[in-house]
Image (tube, rainbow, N blue to C red; front, side, top):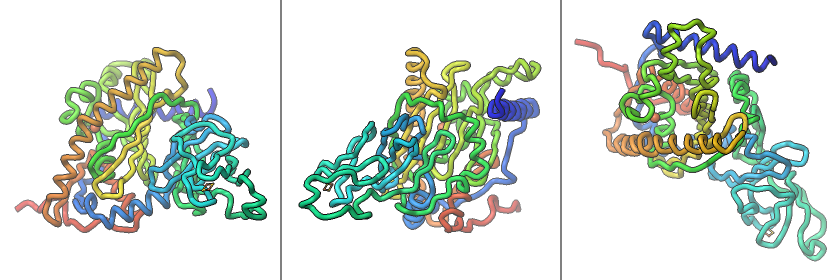
Length: 405
Ligand code: FES
Ligand SMILES: [Fe+2]
């Protein structure tokens, strides 16, 4: 066993022991207390504008997985932050990002969503750029002007690849420290071995709700028994949270009902399940869900949430991957079916409740609050981390409960 495999096994075992302990004892990981939060956090346009700037322009966000840029010349456009960006793997294997803007007169340079190209050629006057961003050719250059100026090359945007994930920070020429951003969550992401994943299906799930309100639906299992009575509750417990926080990021391991059978068995006979099944939240907006179509057949789904211009608009980009590649057609079909099944749950349950709920928040009187329970520990920390990162403290809302008479 390599040391990585050993770490995966140890982490899986320690999570499984915690799960079995919780099932046996009727316990759960919990926050110290409940937390009230102001409704204005979800509805205030000023806060929304600060989030769009600080979290989506000045923080590294996941643009795609390494697998989405499989070889030299692979590219993808990335417009979700509001800044037109093209992400490309160079001939040296490095991932780079540039403003997707032709330096001649500003045309949109790459107009396909993804593909493979040795050069990017602008459709306006035909300037072409190498995938290191350098201007390679301009028609009739001698007559056009003299030498190439530094300003003729594409404008770089910080990009980095870590643990099978491609991060971009959507402010050109800004400083990005991806290792500082990931901190001790990096080694946890490494355990997922995302670098061997293969994309199977992708789509977009829009929702008329604040992006944090949509994000909240991924962070707790407390709603499984009610909202997902038919869909998730038959397979997952809603009363046990297994929570690990890594700075602003976290992991929530879900407890599937088949784990209940482990109680009567020695540890060596516990089922394998999905290693690290549940969600990894990569601050600020990416939720990576690890699930399985059947024992031993896993899938990973990324849900990347992007705020619209309006405070009550969100677009979730959803992509499903086969973690170790697609080894046959039957498996591909199963992973596609898993995509459709989770999209169905999100679109007909989570995002219906989110759109209705967000409209309700907007109708509540000033000073209204919502409350996150002790088992909604992930939401508590998520909102604290977001508020800290934008430099706008959560509004004072008083005690969680009025003192008893
Ligand atoms: S704007 Fe691109 S070549 Fe002119
Ligand atoms: Fe849900």
